[in-house]
Image (cartoon, rainbow, N blue to C red; front, side, top):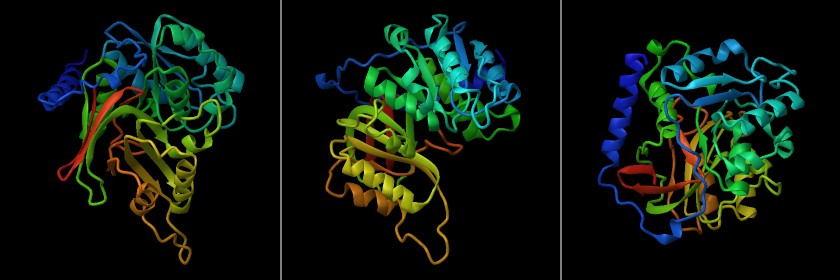
Length: 341
């Protein structure tokens, strides 16, 4: 392993474990749930790379391949990587066959989705999860990969990893910013089963409180489009996190009304608002409410904690999160933290 990568990882892991010490964990028997946690990875294990959504070239995934190999993992590049059917990473049949092969291959211990974009919803109902359910493995990605997180967390009760994908790895590690390095290393940290604790700065619009629950969520627009389908996200009794990009404020407002009217905000344990890259309002056609006002309007009658500006989403500070597993969320006058337990 490259010494620089090795030291970077363990300095980050050491800092996280230090922050983790002294934290009181739950002893509530209600949190002994039947969630399946895929086996954590060890050196020598194989990570498959598949492109179930949009197109990505073989050249573009090379930085991620080289870095994950330096971590000690074997990499198996799927047939869909490099294939192109207009915007998609191959035809539906090609993407389906590649992802199914990865799901069924016992040698593949985790599947890193090469990129998001669009396309998972076109194949999700044709995938056979029978072998995956009996021998779970980590599914990794975000954005359009929210389809997998929602379907697998709610329907199968199996944990997944919401994180950056191959197209987010820096082409030159030596030129990468510290926050970019830290977020990429968080993927290995979670895959290896190390404890994680993420923090967010104090925000005047936060609603304080401490809560525990299964963490679920992802891209807001994807969550909305899955409503009423076989992949609908179950949020009752959960900590929900949401993020989105290139949406207008009125669209965010509409999608949150959907969550509210469909009951997805009623029984939450906590709400985490990640990054929202917004489209600018057209002059003279301003919506008139900020993202903070839009959110707080939808949850004003509920008492659970709300955290804004959390480091997750379509942004550089997008840390790896274990979806479908127990977490502690604490929001107070000093800021917020989220801990996987």
